[in-house]
Length: 301
Length: 323
Image (cartoon, rainbow over all chains, first blue to last red):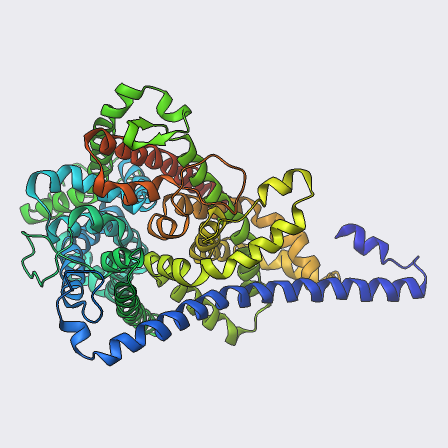
């Protein structure tokens, strides 16, 4: 840049200066165009994926409405027609069981990091390990839960929930800690000055103040977990009927159904895969929008 | 309470020792926080110990042989490690210019009203489950890519090295490159969001100084913002690389499932996580142990990449915020 500026200095002839200026503006325009182009480039696949999912998943979901969402999964993959009922139930059961485990533990852990551990060595190690855990591939978590739990207790929704909980925990831990950090310390001081105990201060002042942020972080973690596939393949099996029992018996999930049907050579199965994809995308979309809405309210306050 | 603190640092003890409930609560919170240590430790122990079966029978050839033939009890992971590295590298190469471009556009150029929609689009993209990307890549994208691959292959067939890299495409379109392209879409939101944070740490005085000296916007970006952000951007890219290495389902669906060591990015290949999900169902004991050993290798690689990424980003942020 320095070179450019000196080249455009007063000793340069007038025409050169004009040329130089146009050249620099041209480069500027090209680069701005490229940067805007990258925005377009990323919108394109999103539109294509959304369009294909709606175009191919919509027809099967609508022609068999609402049986597509309620009927059992056909025993033979080549069979044409609905449904994915057990997979929807399975996804909801597994995801919310995982959330029931991971979210309270994650919030409590974040409370320790922010209110007790602070900058101590232990807290720093936990933060670092939590970060590393966010990067552990979901398939490794799935195998881990398979080896530790499923081998002994058999396939069940609970095994899948354990795997998802391991994936959600570090995410909730991190987002909650960030939200707790935003709570002004004057609130803490005021509460302690009134003579409350530390646990009381955390439960009735700090957590309520951070609640919207915590909720939105947790919803995002749920949205992320509900689309997970790899860990479920080892832990929940492939049931074709509804199984609302969390702790025993094979179960099913939308993501696992999509994976199994995607590689199937039969048109009927492939159609069900697209229908299930539409259902799953809608589910995660609703959760994400909900999370954003909660955050927006939090920020505007 | 009776003994007043002698050094200025300690707070005067205005309250008695913490009550029982307080201690229980603190203990509960500490044990929840320590859970991440316990889980990660258990993962390490369990996965390592179960990989032992194959490592004891195959020895180091597990990592040096590229022959993966479960039917003959031959488990050489080299071709799978290769596939994982090639697909992740393609993903990073494709994604980085786009991600950094978006981050720069959003922070430096976009008018305020455009920022929010762009961020929302990235959120939506990050929210699409990987299995949906896989389904889309398998049934929609792969077949459409074959003629494009063919065209590129013909264009480069005479060039020495590139002729091999852009070799004869696989007939289904499922290949290293297809997997890399899908991964690129998946990691772009991750790299972009961190890159945005990094770029935003540029001191406004330096940016405005450059503009005041007559620099164009691009000169300001290339002369001030990019040099300032370089370290953090490297961290963001490594984070994306870590994600691309471990991504399973989308890759399993579009890579073509053919373990081979080849330079040809348009040919079918296989990657570690993809092999694990695709072969788990019909695996016997030694085969399962081999798949677990793959998971261990994957775990080790991703943890290493993520740890490096984290320390790079932390060092950058500390430096950038002048702490």
